[in-house]
Amino acid sequence: MAKGERANFGSKIGVILASAGSAVGLGNVWRFPYETGNHGGAAFILVYLGCVLLLGLPILIAEFLIGRHSRANTAGAYQKLAPGTQWRWVGRMSVLAGFLILSYYAVVSGWTLEYILQAATNSFAGKTSADFIASFQAFSSNPWRPVLWLIVFLLATHVIIVKGVEKGIEKASKIMMPALFIILLVLAACSVSLPGAMEGVEFLMKPDFSKVDGSVFLSAMGQSFYSLSLGMGCLCTYASYFSKDTNLPKTALSVGVITTCVSILAGFIIFPAAFSVGIQPDSGPSLIFITLPNVFQQAFSGIPVIACALSVLFYILLAMAALTSTISLHEVVTAYLHEEFHLSRRKAAWLVTGGCTFLGIFCSLSLGVLKGYTVFGLGIFDLFDFVTAKIMLPLAGMCISIFTGWYLDRRVVWGEITNDGTLKVPVYRAVIFILKYIAPVIVSLIFINELG
Image 1 (cartoon, rainbow, N blue to C red):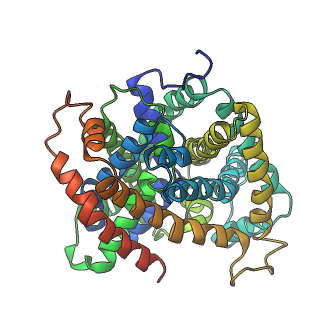
Image 2: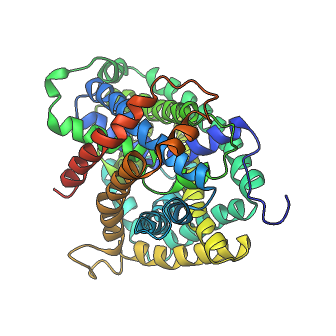
């Protein structure tokens, strides 16, 4: 690649898998099933699918067109497209959000490595529910062990980022995304074959519309943002590496389909297994680090080798899902430092890795020895989560809609979505209508709801 020439993804499948990898993460494996369980099962899934199609994909297309047309990092994109205006702060907010999210997300990602080790050494065998709870609390509050795994996870992310777009991000995505789907299918097949598992399958497939109310719609819209990684700058940054012939609407649809399939397959792993042993899935860390090890042990108590193997596979799945997300979050900030401050890619990557390690250590310690130190009543880990998920991401999503729907030259929007008229996009007018009128209002509702 000539000096000064911007990197590109090398293939169409690389574009789709890298973009989908950016969107797929821990939230697809535990947050989606939890939201599904709390909001009517199959009914929630149908509402969620509607939100993805009618709200998520138009904003995803908007992020793509901003990134590709500008051919710049997320912050630089707004400076190029709206020079001399305050819109530059939207891009900078997305970069900051990516940095803060990576700092605490890497803590939980590191936990998956600890649990791969525990599962592989058969440490789950013979434990009761109380033992799993005590074990998780002891580990997460440990002053050094989670920090060690945090550093290992960030270094693995760093190695891929330093290799660049095509040889690092694209190559890793081509390996991890197919592997992730294979593991999902194996685990789902084992889960649905358990005695009594059909009750969980029915919960996922038979909608109960009596449970659908306003909170279900708001939760489904929030989950669609979470699942598609909207507002973090990841997809805008990745789109800046797209070639001019990339079909943006088709790529957005492919990403939406892949992330939804991952989420639903995760439901087919969790619900049948949980229903089989009489356990209702819970939320957050307690689901993937307390409830599920217990489920695997109970479900396959007569065949300990299978219980061990499935536990290992599940945590490898989690680690890969987390890694595809940490790569995209790291790239958002690395690209910003590389392009805006003219640093080498390697130096920019080290600054991001070092900064996230520093903040990540405090996030990890805030769950243990620094638990008593709070800001606005929140520990550092919870503070970062609250500020990013409940304030920065909804604001960014709303700004993306308004920027694309109202500010950008309509010829630019039309040219990017239709590849200068070479593509037929029957839904073009609908996408613009949603971005102008519907998305800003809906995202405002999500924002208000998230703030309680």
